[in-house]
Structures are given as C-alpha cells and as structure tokens.
Image (cartoon, rainbow, N blue to C red; front, side, top):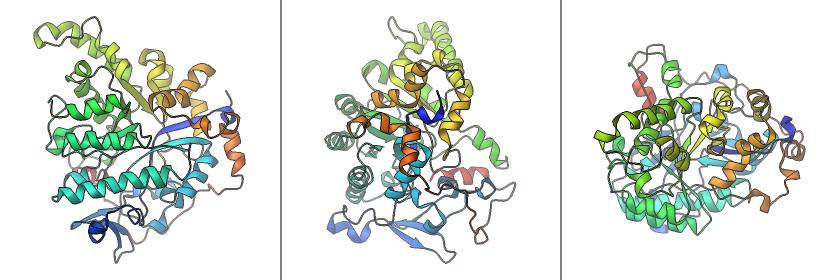
Length: 427
C-alpha cells in the first residue's frame, strides 16, 4: 500500500491544555480556585492549582522543533506549535500529516489525572475533573466531529464516583477512560483488590476501554540517579510490561471477562516473548500459585483483553501474528518527542514493507474503530479519509521544522538526578 492510500487513526496523542479551557465549564463557586496559567519571570508558562506549579515539559510539546532542541525544561505557549493547544490548528496539523482521527491523553493533570487525586478538597477536585472532561468532550472533540476519539479522566479517589463519571461520559459518546498503570504507586488499592470493582463494572456496562499510558503512575524505570537520560528513555516500555503482567495475573480478567484494556505507547515488539513467558509461567506454576484460567492459556486471555499500541516498531509488525493481528493499533504521539509527525505514513510504510492491505488496514484504523466504538465515516467518506485526501485539503499548511530561542532555559547537565527528572517528565 502506498502512503497516500493509508487511513490513519492514532490511538495515542496528547493535548497541551489551553489557558481558557475551564472558562465555560467550571461551576461559579469554584471559578476563583480553578487551575490557571501563570507566566513566570523567565518567560515560561506554568499551571497553578491549589498552591502547586505544574510546568509544560519540553518533551511533551516539541512537534516542529529540531531534535537538537529537545529537552525537559519548561516551555511557554508561544514556543509551541499552535497545534499543541489550539484545536483548529491541531486538526490542520493532523490533516497535513494525513491523520484522520486522534485520541488525546491529558498533559498538566498527568496522563491519569492524578493531580486531582492529590487535591485535598475533593469537592473541588471533582468539579475541576468534570469540567476538564466536559471541555475535552464538548469543545476539543466536539468542535470537529469524527476527528477525535474522546477520552475521560478517572475519579481515582472514589470508585463509585468513578463509575458514575464513566456513565455520565458514556452518555456523551465516550468510550475511553485513561487510568494509571499502577494505582499502588499512588497510594491507592492495587489491581489485585476488589476496591475498583464498581469502576470495572461501569466500563464493561458502557463498553469503555481502560486506556493505560506509560508513565501514568508518575514513575518511570530508573536504574541509578546518575545514569544517562538515554537509560530511562530506553526502558520506558518496561512500565507497560509491568502493568500488563499486573493486570493479567490479577482477578480482573476472571471477574470481568469483557473488560477491554489498551496499553498505550508501550510498543509491541516485546509482546511475543511476554506471551511465551506468561504461558510458561502458567504451565510451570499455576498448580501451586492458584491461578486458573480454565480451558484458556494466559496468552489467550491477553488477546481477549488487551490492545497493544506502537509508534514505530518493525519487529512488532514482523511478529504481528504472534501478537494477534486484531490486537495492534498504530499511534503518532503528537506533539511528543517520539512522534512520527509530520510524515507518519511514510515512516509506517517503511516499517510495514511487505505487509498486506488487510493486515495494514487493521493496524492503521480498523482495530481502533472496533476497540473504541468509533466511526469517523459517519462524518466523511472513506475516499476523503486517506492520507492523500486529507493532505490535499490543507495544501500549503506549514509543517517545517523551526528553531526557538533556548537561551532562557537551562538544560539538565550530564549526571543530573535522573530520578528527579523522571518524576518531572511524568508530572
């Protein structure tokens, strides 16, 4: 398949929330306490909420910048591509890259909304969280029907309230809920507890996918405080591997056999070995550990429950049938540093050389549509949804790489505390 003939739906991108996002959605009594943007003396923009300062991290908004300027230092809105935070510009950037639709994880509340979980005033936290969800669904996604898969933030501190929010969002057409990869790291009951059962029941009842993004627990794999940054970046998928093992061996697959889970930004090349390891562990040890999947093997259970996602993964594509061709979806990761924007189709064509159209269509859009109950073709024809057609709609849109003045900010020096940087990068 030629790049211009592909149809691309990305199941993992990110939004840098705009300063005005709460204006139309926060209850009046909380208006003065809602998160707000503050410009610091160094020119960087930070979110302020209940005494906390949450910066925009450079690696989270580097689309269109030279790789030499990547870093984790704070940035300002005027240093980002407008598509990071302006939805009209985002759709232009998507079309220029040939991307039909996108699912956007949050930024300043963290990937799992744990900022609000840490808020002492839980009435305020719930009001802000619901305002966030309403902004995301009604404004960000609602302004361009068929171009976004809407996603909700979870109420982490109360499973009954979390279930109620799932039902409220489902009534708006939401079929994705972001969640932490490890609630125990946040001081919450683990996946092995029955604490979360009301949430799992709600997700199943309303056909909502539990979308688990790497780093959503607030921690990344760190080997030593003085290890190079490259170590942490290389090991990022290990967070998702840990979450997959935790979830699969938990009581959840047995008690909730219809629950769907997406492993976002974890890659796929490691999955075949992981499945072999699951089955070997079960065969050798389930008689004394007490695990019982009946007539199924753990690899069967994995394929029933988990969607795996990748940006660029030639090994995973080559081993796609060992993973499960119905369990793989593509992602772009705009505007993060790993993103393939603005040439995702061309990069994917190289990685998927020799893959037949039937398999490639499943990976690029059909699996995403099925898992997330999403139908972009209700809003535009398939012929108008290809990479080539979308690019033609915005011919001339500037996707060139541009340099920004980095003199105001200091880069982390070699030997800087990697653990501290990891927490900052996933804040």
